[in-house]
Image 1: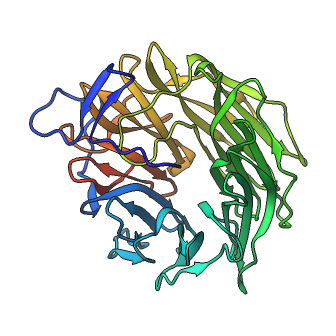
Image 2: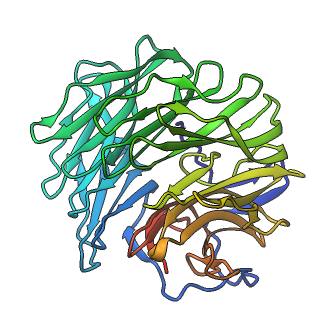
Length: 429
């Protein structure tokens, strides 16, 4: 994913102009004030943070640098205390993804270079020594990492075989270390936006876009076998940044936005993998336009997000456009009741997008998003089923963006404070 950094961004050809790093007084926010101020994890020049949590309250966060310094990582222990910053690799490392095992073991995968070739590395605390896991492959990019049960970690990435044709490779970490890369999808054109999710029994789901703008996916069974890669979207629209959620016994979901090439006739579509095949697609939402860009540093996220509970309840959140603005919406699914009606989370009068979702205490989904409120770019969250008001992640006079969420008993959000390009963390309730 190419960075889309802007210092003063104009949305939609002049609709809204946002001056990043606002200071002084501002109009009151439409959302509640956070109970506590966020904590700073990195002081400046950071971008694209990611976060994962474990079962005991532990967490790991990582981010890239705007100035070419190495990928950085910090770990929160079971006592909810954040440790010191660790830098990994050399100045060419970027695009990290993180995972946390149930025993609190943190993992990070990231892009770097093996000689002059783009490569994927993985590392784990406490020493954070990187392992080259894309060995023997050229131009490996967009790593994803997830924990799939006790002692099993899955990493996936895109490997470009001739510059434009991309294939999907995976490696599994077990008692003997990282396995040799295995190809789970052959090369197609325009491969990007890889997404990985894993369950505790070894099940996993991978999705990406490629081959004419379609969404592709493959599912992993608990025995380690991957299903044949398949196109899951239709050919009449272009798919955007699919997201996945893995359940037990090889079951999984993939959701994506899709629209015609001019951005019109948009819809949000989801499919379920079970019993070895993909169910028919379900349309969650339709709109006149697809999701529209947010004024933000770092990677420009337009796709939906998914999160699943241990008992199979699912929450999908997405952004769709209307009248040159985007709205953030969500729907929940339970095995007994099916899909609930759509809920609009952002103010219809504002421009919102870049949603994220995680499962918090008692199985309640927490959705976070970015919203332009009174010409300030704010990050905010809402717990579904826990009240009708949203809560800002940081004080009202500060602009912020690039949210990542992780759930569990002590859910957490990381994001960028745009005054200093710092990484901040906020506990969620």
